[in-house]
Image (cartoon, rainbow, N blue to C red; front, side, top):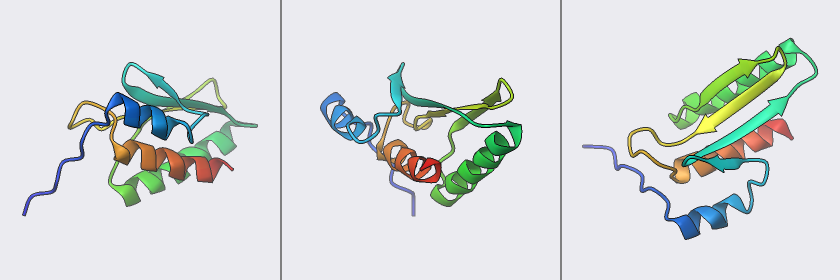
Length: 99
């Protein structure tokens, strides 16, 4: 049995969903958020927590750890080439880890 492919969100639905994700920016059809931490260890701990969420969701963001204490996350559904509810849901889960 094949897995159902997620649907790319229409612009109006995406705008509605982004209302609850104000810390995220839509850039070139992807959700992007950069966070700054006190130090490298905290940034790395956050990356590991996001990695665990991604594994649980079977949906994996691009993660960039840079400038020793910053993490930039980029979400989009690679196999459909756009933003889907998988991205929105993972962004919400990541926000919960940050809070």
